[in-house]
Length: 241
Image (cartoon, rainbow, N blue to C red; front, side, top):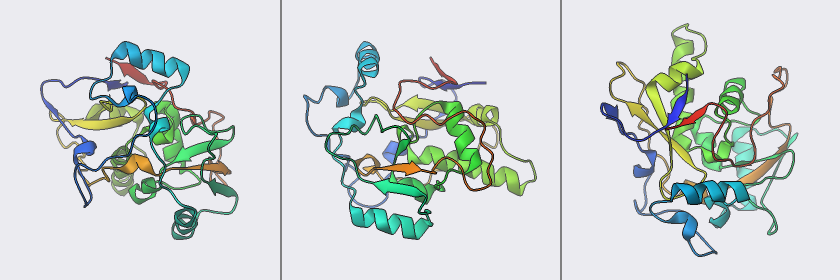
């Protein structure tokens, strides 16, 4: 079973988290800085996207980071991030899409969606399956699959499989940018779990590097497969339609 990076189909309920806002101006979006703006046009030509992916050009690298040291300290305290995980802002010579070895790019808003550091084993497994870096995924994608996880556990069904998630949701490329993905739900799936929680419109403009023991919690057994940390065009189980 694959999550398709697909176009709209008949009978599909369009759930686009980009259209939802959490207060503030609905037109607010991350500020793109530098370059000629070619990566953030309303429509990105597929050939241009392929070339951009090959040479490591992603929209995140043109977004001004508004994260502060104070916010990092608050995040650690609020969510109990252990000292074995180092949090830091990016240096001027570093690219957000290409973290240093051992580091991963994280958005602070993910934590309000149930995301935690170190990674929960279920999140770790899902990220491995998707083959995308954590920051490439819209916050509401985390809400969708973690909501499924909680519901399945409450019903005594164990963990929802990747195939069950794929039966309800379609993963799509974020239009007008390169490297970001969101999900929509299929209308013809009875009882599909739809989580229309609001998400911050400008969620992309805050990010930081995490390094150290961010992959596994103490006592968790790793699978040997690693979570993708650098941005990429498509993941291991993505089928571009």
